[in-house]
Length: 107
Image 1 (cartoon, rainbow, N blue to C red):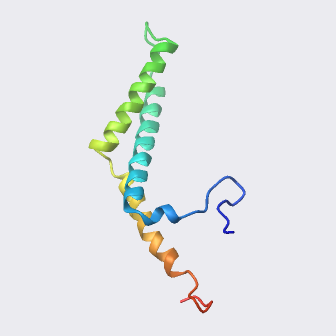
Image 2: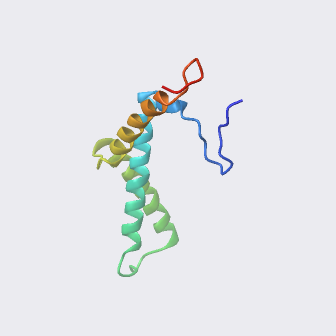
């Protein structure tokens, strides 16, 4: 049975990298998360509180930022998702080439 985890909760299964659609979807999700973190960081760098700021307003602003990040990743990406996708696409053939051949030796 092949190991799918390294004990730290991180999956070592790379079979999902074989599909270009999966890589593209992962790149878009990564870009959305990155842009969301960037927006959140910009929001926390405000110089002061407004007169009408509240927890409810902050929660709705966070939800709006999350939707904005997903929309930006889908329609106007900054490129970090594509860079990650390209990196993983290059790494996948390297892993396949280093796999042992049928006679037990590595190529």
